[in-house]
Image 1 (cartoon, rainbow, N blue to C red):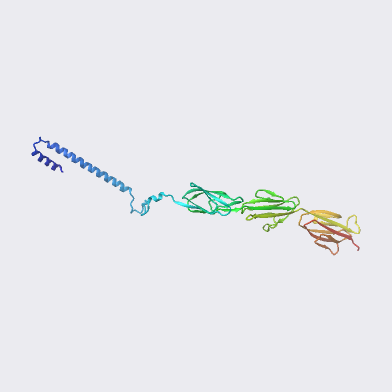
Image 2 (cartoon, rainbow, N blue to C red):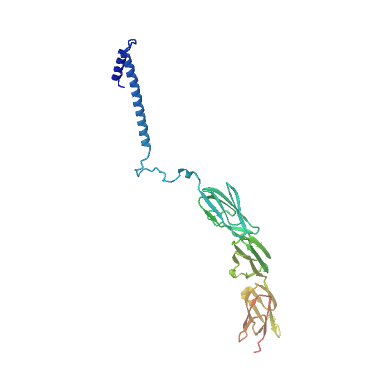
Length: 345
């Protein structure tokens, strides 16, 4: 009701009433104030509502603006689904004599055979390998595992490990029959008879044959090692290796004078200059086992070399009888005789 209408109504009521006289002006002022407060409140509420709508509109992203990075949920997608952690699978497929234990927040799981463990994505897992009594873990089958028996993983995706256990390998080393030793370079052990060592499958071992005193190394019985004193073997199976040594060989050289023995002798036999020089009687000499030797006989003045005797494998005498040679291999004790006689013409 407008103020003018309000005033008209009051005047009409006052004329037809026996009530005491009313102060129309005072009533009009009260009516004006009441209507003014109501209008002011309505205007204030409208102003506040408009301000709130403005602020809310500024905060919301514009769906039509391509530059806006705000992610809107796709239709049909439950926004609460992200609250559930993703699950991944850890698979263990061991081979050989051994098992693997999986340890995580849910406890432990032993895997002597193929097994799986479902874990939350990014879970920390500890794997522990237990080889059999005579076996070793030779590989985990996963690049991130390099410790011999323990592997700590963060499982971010499905993973399959193939741990491989192999039986330990025996290495049997024999040195003999002569003086000599075999040194195992990995642990500096030396074997002078028959020794047994156990290694992880696939280990590469270097053996070294070492001659002692005057013993001579003859060779290995392994084709891969040939005649070198060093032998390298890869233990993918039980292996036996024998290093053969031989003690020096005794060589007896005899100079014999047929008919009579002059004071200065009838001739000499030598093995290389300075190695042996036998002028009379029997001369003992030690040579290395297996040595290929050439003995040379030289007749004294007025004598000639008659013949060779003993263990010569080949023997020669010059036409004039002045010199001759004897060859042999010293693979056992040997004896050789050079016989000289007086020239008759």
